[in-house]
Image 1 (cartoon, rainbow, N blue to C red):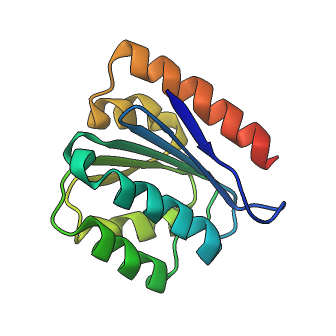
Image 2 (tube, rainbow, N blue to C red):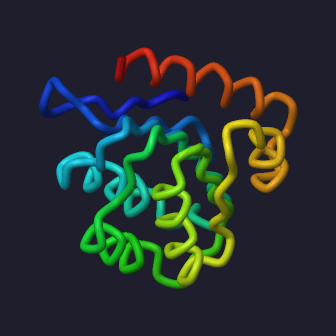
Length: 144
């Protein structure tokens, strides 16, 4: 089952899609608005019972959560552990990902050329890798 979160303002900096236990997020070079970030947190909260099974792939052109948004993320995650891979060539976005890794140990960042390593980190099956490729491409097109 595929669900897509696409509501609110027409111009977006982040789109999130949940497919089974996979969550895909694509971000522009701008940080997500609080509205967009709360959409993402709402997905996490709604699926708290399956949080340990989640795998999150974030592809960002440079946008990353603000300090306040990171605080809300830490609160939403609590002690839950699951794989998160942030893929970006933007140094600033990768630095923010590293700060999140301080409270969420399974959170890692990768360059765009390291997408295979990101998939490995998430332990994606061949089918899940194909899903990731498809959904990331679709979400990028929605933001373009």
